Length: 131
Length: 64
Image 1 (cartoon, each protein chain N blue to C red):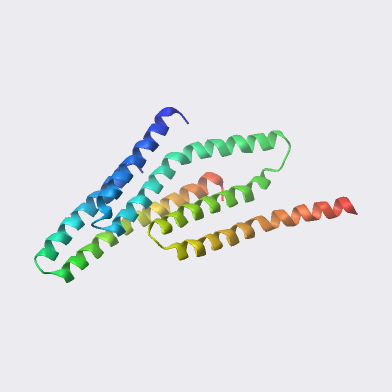
Image 2: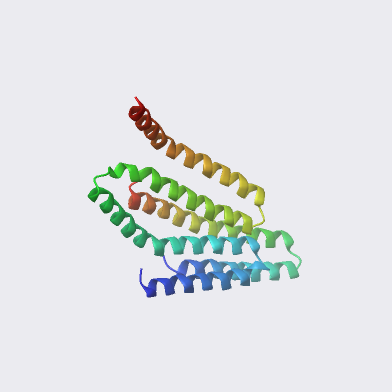
């Protein structure tokens, strides 16, 4: 990621902040949707760089002789965590703290479900080492 | 997807806010509420399409 991308991200955030503050008094619901639109634009800017990092990390795993399937649950949990965090903060911005707490609980459950097969494999490995 | 999306939402928001004020001042509260609701639905429809596209992109990027 070079400086121009970071500059674009900063300017996008500033534009969203200005538009959001402009609309906050007159139409709070639309101000919230501006925040959501900003999140989408920023993710769109960031995703190509995330893809490059993911591919490099996959290359490193392949080079070290590890199975790249091990990376999949980690990527899933990372994605779930980030989506949950962003949405929960949006809920808090709208003053819905209860909804944000429930969403975080759902996110934690989804992460747990994603990571369980990996934990099972690790436990089997420990069991095989012990016997 | 670009910063145009933010300005599009902001433009709709300003338009809806102005229309809302005009209708409230002229004593048409029900129509003002309907205008706000229509603006919200329009923006929601734009954003839902973008969210759907973003999810597809994330799934394609990480092979999920």
